[in-house]
Length: 162
Length: 254
Image 1: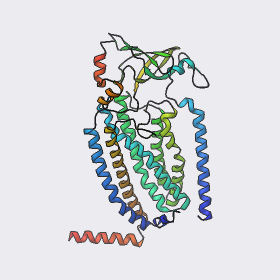
Image 2 (image 1 turned 30 degrees about the vertical axis):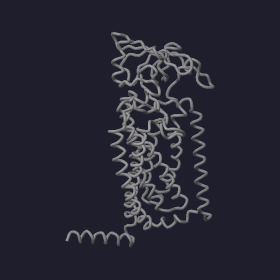
Image 3 (image 1 turned 180 degrees about the vertical axis):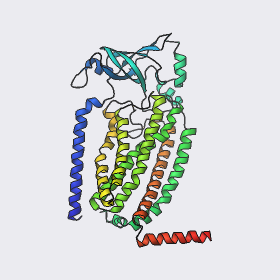
């Protein structure tokens, strides 16, 4: 490699290295703010090492699993209330509106709303989060004991039983 | 080490190499896309959670994964251009750029179409979606920067620097779902260990990815051939090539 090429190679590598370290530092500094949502544990016990808790009245997103058996629907309106958890304490979410097709007990969801008390959120938007596993229904039943129901049917059939 | 590559810095050799490689990519593209997409859309089993909606994976995942690969390929070409100062490297870089931009657009578009029925929203500013949108803007920026200079060596240099700086976005896109909480799911196949997708669904996906690779190769090579011809229009070998082609066309017409 001739000296001029070598010099160019070094220049390009040094610039590249500087950009990488600059961006890494920026992302590291912004780390907490890039998260899309708080987990229920973070809402109640505070976030990460800083331990900063969200304030009551703050607009935020919460993401967690819908606790089995916690979904309570109002028979006359679209109001629904359910609990979310990850590994620690539970947070109650109340919502009025149409839930996404994938919403069911045990499903991961992300809700946007206002924190009313330290464990109660009034949501204005509920989104379903699905995991990275894909398999045919027969296999899911075999592996996980999940009964196959189409998302739309699940909503229709299970509603009266709540 | 790379001396065997040096002849391809000459546009004539690069043009000939394009012609040699083109049929292989074209066949892979046709076979892979036809088999992969028909198998995926019609014959693969439906998902236990998402039903038939998951089938958009056969377009979404290949375009999303390969939009990142093409970016790395483009930046590598830019790097070679900067260090060795080959104009064929800059031309390859610019031949890949529009293909990558369209792939990125397809991944964003199919992602939105998939997000609405499954998540309940077309778009959310989570780390994965946002960083992929930035990738799209990077592609557009590189093409715009290249087009802004009339001196094409200068243009290639600037675009290559921008492409190289943007490489930092690639690991961010890939790891965004691990580093931060996102609505987007984690990695299904591009991770260490067993892919978390049933093999009856995985095979058509892999074939579809192969088809997309073929398509990307085909489009890039065709684009590169065009770029070479346009840049070298006054060179004797191009004139010769074009006149023989013209003669053949005239012969057929007569």
